[in-house]
Amino acid sequence: MKKRLMRVGIGVGTVLVFIILLMSCYSVKTGEVAIISNWGKISRIDTEGLNFKIPIVQAKKTMVVRDQIYDFNQMSVSTKDMQSIILDLTVQSSISDPEKLYRRFRGLHETNFIIPRTKEVVQASISKYTIEEFVSKRQELSRMIFQDLKDDFEEYGLAVSNVSI
Image (cartoon, rainbow, N blue to C red; front, side):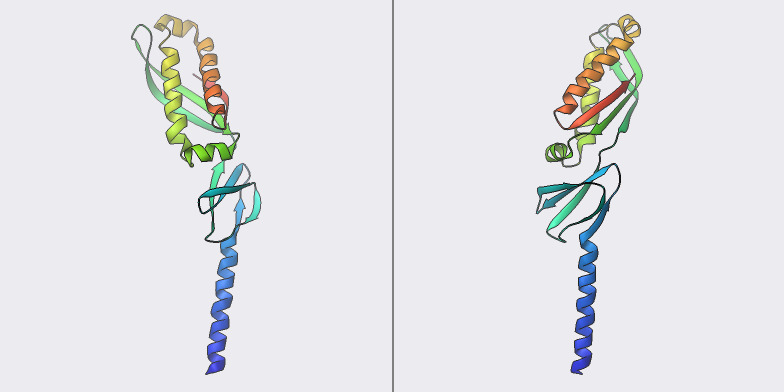
């Protein structure tokens, strides 16, 4: 009876150790980073490959740092002469400082910053031009939007590489 109880105890212990080992190993894909936090406080950033963490104590949040394309299709904006324009805009950006971005937005940077800020910059830029100026100075306007987004995004750890109207 004691031997049987001891075998069951050893078996349960072995299974628990195996589960804890599985919970401590994780893999980060190429073009991603893992933000590791101890009880909610960022402790380190792991890059691609096999990594380890302390189960229960440490949590992992993965972020894609390679270039991503954000499409703004059928965006309606107004010009200086109150004409409405429907345009398609594409913004290509990547994460340059994952820790800064994560501290600010906790992984919700797309919905809480990138999308609203892009719409705001585009509306503010296009509203300075009449419809005729918009058509004739489209390249200049694209460069201006690119520069404004680049300056705004850099402050939060994002790098803009291209804007297309």
